[in-house]
Length: 280
Length: 280
Image (cartoon, rainbow over all chains, first blue to last red; front, top):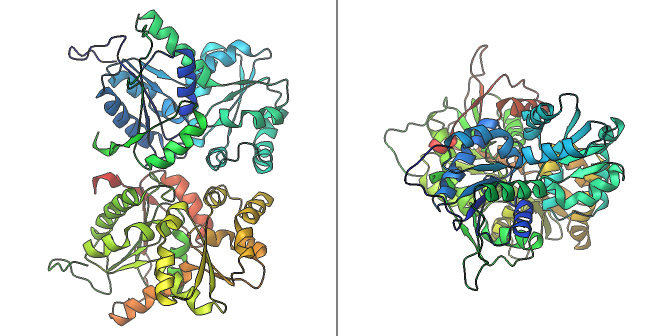
C-alpha cells in the first residue's frame, strides 16, 4: 500500500470487489450478508475469463489493471475475490495499491488450520492456484507440521457455469478428482476456487461427513469486516431507497453476466456496465 | 483486403494461422498434410482463450490484433482457424487485411450443402458461433430450402482440453447435447468448433452411422490449397534441413501449449514463443 496524499479513505466510500468472472459473486454474497450497510462495486473480467489456466505474469497484469479501475471510484478497500488472482498477484497489488487489499487465500488457510484435528488439509482449486503453491505456503507458516494434499479440478468451473450444480456428471467428475484426497485421510478441505461453493453439496457428498469443508468466501467476508472495524471504516448508516448500493461492471457480455449473477445473489442485479479494462 | 504498395506477396512467404488457443492445431494438421511444402506461423491466444463465450465485439478486437501480428511476418495469407473468430470478425478482417483471409466457416458450410441428401443440416459449435447465426446465413445462401438445426455445446471444449477424448463422461454429455439433433432427422452434422474433430469418434457414435460428419478443418485446408494454386502462390520447393518451417507463438503458457500441441501434431513442436498480443 503506497501512501498518497490525494487519496482519502472514509467509511462512506465503497468497497471494490473483483474476480475473473462470476465466481467472485459467492464472495460478494457473503459480504452483503455480513456487512449489509456497505456500498459495493463489483468487477468481473468476463472478456478474459478464466484465469485458472493462465500464467502468474498474465494474471498479475490483468489484476493490476482492475485495481487501477476500482481505485478510480475512490474505494476504501479492495477484495480480490478470486483465488487465482490472490495466488498470483497479492504481493504486487499490496505493494502498489493505495488501499488495503483483502484476498481469499489467507482467510481460508487460517480457518483450515483452526478446524483441522489431524493436521491433514486438502485443497482443491484451479491449475494456476495449485501450481502457485500459495495455500501450501500460508498453511505451513501457521502450522509447520500440517500435511497438505492439493488437487487441481479444471472441469469444475465449466460444469458450474453450465449450471450442472446437481448432476450425475458432476458427481462422477468429483469422484475422480477427490478419490485421492479421501485416500490421503484429510479431515479438512478448502474449496479453493470461488465457483466451488456452488457445488458444495456434491463435494460434501463425495468426501463424506467426516471431512469439514472450508468456504473461503465466508472467511473472507469475516476478515473484511474485522479489518474495517479495526480501522473504524465500517459504514454505519443503512442504505436509503434510490441509493446506488451495488454496482456491477464487466469487460464483456453484460447480459449473460446478469443472468448468472441473478442465480447466485438474491438481490436483483438490475444492470452491469461494460468497461474496456485493457485501457487501465 | 486493402492494397498496399509496400506489402509484397510471394509464394515463398509463410502462411499465418491463428486460433483462440490449441483448437486451431487441428486445422494446422490438415494444412501440413495437404500442402507440406508451406512455411507456417501459428498463433494461439492462450492468454484470452476461450473465445466461444465472449461477445462479437471482443472477439473482433482480439482477432484484429492477431492479424496485425501475423502480417508483421510478411505472410502471404491468413487462416482464421477458429470458428468463433471466423463467425465474429471475418468481414472486418477481410476489409482491413493486406492479404487474403481464409476462414473455417464457409468451407464447412459449402461441404455440408454438397453431402446432404435430405437438406437437413446440423451444426454444433460454441455459444458465440451459434449466436452469430453465421452458418445459417452461408448455408441458406447456398441452399435456401435447407433446414438447419443448431446446438451450442459449451462443455465439449473443456472436456477435450482435459484430455477426455474417449470417456463415459464425454459420451454422456454428447448424448445430452445431440439428442435433439437426432430427433430433428438431420443427415449431416458440421463439427463447428476446431476442438470437436478430437472427439469425432464420440460424436459419430452418438449420432449413428447415417449422419455424415463434416470436418471444416479438412475443407479449410482444401480451400486454402485451391486459392494458393489459383493465384500461383503455392510453394514449390520442399523444406530443407534446418529451415524454420513451422513457428509457434502464444500469448501465455508456452510450455502447456507445447504439451497439448504435441498430442495433436505428429511433427515435434520444439518451441513456442510468448507474445504480448495486446500491444498489436
